[in-house]
Length: 450
Image (cartoon, rainbow, N blue to C red; front, side):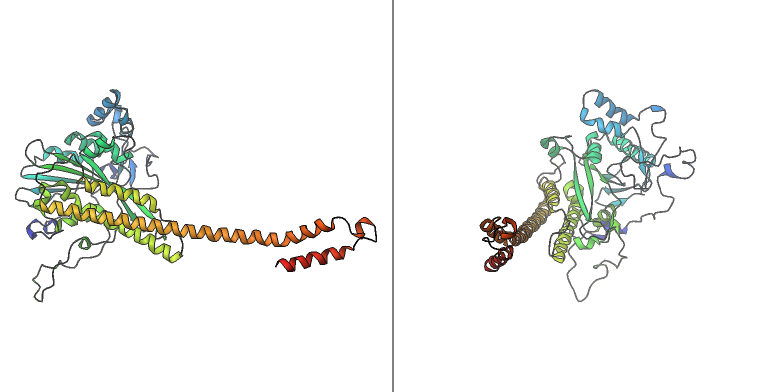
């Protein structure tokens, strides 16, 4: 990512600080005074205390407009949207919901709006703002759980007229929702993130979540709007400078060439993505949705590389096979590579011809993800070889144990077959050998075999 001019750097914008009161208004003390007891339930992540049910949703049984639209589609035969219709019958909201708004203005200047913390404020913002002077608008919604709250879906869907399949994909994934040809040409796609789980002691434990992306061209002009849904508040200790090329050394370093030192604090992926606007070409981002979201794919590649390295290190430490799931990882990396190869989605607006910067960015990402696949394949081959060695060792131990029993019982069987019951102590005949001769013969044969 090439550094951009300071005038279009998002870091130089005045960003309002987050106040403790900046939370979803539905969960302020006053609004919850009459809330029914026992409503802190979640159909999705019961263990997560940031998700709570809002009992005021669709009070009186009357559906909100966008939900009514989805319901009528289901009644008309779109059975694949029935899970979304049922999902929107209740509203499980996140107290820590945050929606960031970034505009690329005419003249390729960046402007960040105040963060939004509930769907009421979001709906008001979308209805009041006229997009004057805005070429591209990015709406970044961060909420815990596999899907957005019904209220935020209602606000986004009704204001921007979004395809409801986007929300169902965000909640349930592409479970027979779209055929491959539809999925590749839809105005939305998703990126699967797997990151090390810092909450456990196991280095190979991971957490998975998705970032869903919808790109909608404006009805007039060549601008567009992007909705990015981050389904996790997960934070990682990482600086986005890791993704950028450092400035060239010079004995007389001008002030501002190297960024000022910053506190190394864990950031969510929404925050990391916002920070990458310091390094991308804003003019290019305004004309290419793929280039605009490509820092997410670079973050995705960085996380996968870290996960694979953790598995390799743990396998070496154990001199065996750790609990990392390398097969599942390969499938997800291939999906990310497919997103890169399609330039995000075939349904996104593309200015022809594609600029050299976007082409170069795409080629570099393809190279990164193909390298990850090579690493994963090598890891899988090493694990298969290690598993084969372990199996041979186990077979050898089993064979040795079987041979030990054979060495003990074969001489007894051989001697007993010769002597039979013909010993004087059993037959009563003095002409037969004594029983002690039987044991002496058995021991002698054992010695000869060993």
